[in-house]
Length: 139
Ligand code: IDP
Ligand code: MG
Image (cartoon, rainbow, N blue to C red; front, side, top):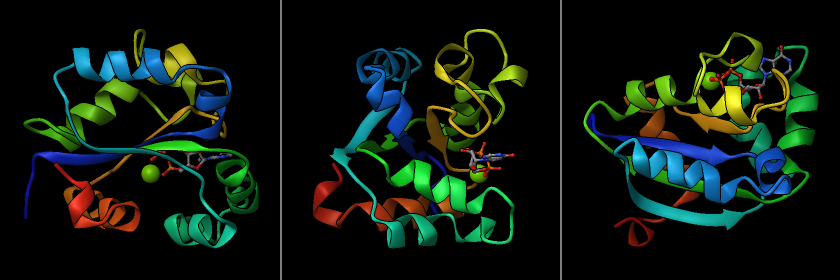
């Protein structure tokens, strides 16, 4: 299993607010190489499946609404220790708890609308990448 790739989404709130460029700049400056990237919009069925692990949580419905309300930027990123380093770069789920300088501290509004997704394991990075991209879209 590869340990050098992670999957990210710049979520609808980040796209709506015009933060795509600033967030990608930070990702590049932090040493990640873009392996795959596209502007896309998840259907309700897509979001339900992507976040199926949270289906029993009280915020599941709200999360699916949020993630489907507009386009996202989906991307696969490569760097040594990608999963862990990207989680460090984005910061805590709740921006109120996120470290200074992290993407969520800079661009997220709330624990629900938190600007960016980052895979939590190598296994999920592979699953999430395959959910959004065909092999021929990865470079
Ligand atoms: P993560 O994105 O930092 O891995 P998870 O716990 O996996 O956080 O939750 C997935 C997403 O669900 C979060 O990024 C956020 O958008 C949303 N979420 C998590 N906890 C809450 C909550 O308490 N209220 C509303 N939305 C939440
Ligand atoms: Mg998570």
